[in-house]
Length: 331
Image (tube, rainbow, N blue to C red):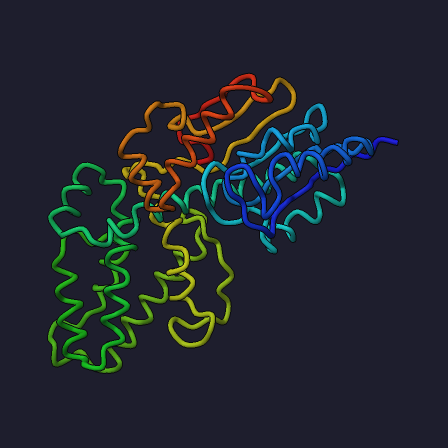
């Protein structure tokens, strides 16, 4: 009797090019895949959720149903199917809703891909001089909000936590004079008193309250893509707290700066119906654009090399029959 699985996830192990843990591609095919195929088991959505797993696409593709898809990675990255994602998948798995299952996975891959783009630029943007920041914002004015969150919101947070109120006031006034600061951060300065001798503990608490409002907006408004539950959380005190949560979302927030070059997504999607392979268009270029190689190198030292090696292998023979490159795939 044929048994069809809607979703199969292989994870909880280390991958390298051509192997998973101590199992080579041949081992996996011989001792895992072929016995499952012989038992008439097929899979609708197969996720190889470990580093450089696309190098094993050929070994695992026989498990796919006629319309099955296989999700894998061409360079090292974090897990797709986390505990929270399993919770989101529970209901669609119960009702065998393949579209809903794929929607959850796609949403997760998009969020992770955006985070990778943000991470690839994070230290660079934080390290810009004010002249470099101004030059970028002049060329890409739509990036002001995201850049301001990354560069200037932490400076406001540092200021309101200073032991010296005089220094806190001086820092805030200095930031208010910086034209690169975004409008939402600048609105916090509207509550600054006109003179340093008026900046007392109460005035500092007012600024902290306005900062808290801004952080809550970032964490909850759909436009920022984080949409965290924040009820009952304080700005700095306790674990978790609002400030920690917004700091943990920095990569996704910076990815909203569309003037920054996208770092190609690590994910490739293979479809059994025709042998198609969806991937980022940057991986079709030979050699890779040096700027793309630089971004990938910020994610993992071997990311560019691994992605090129795996992609060339996939495109050179079966089971892949046709490439479907997309600009900014999953972003």
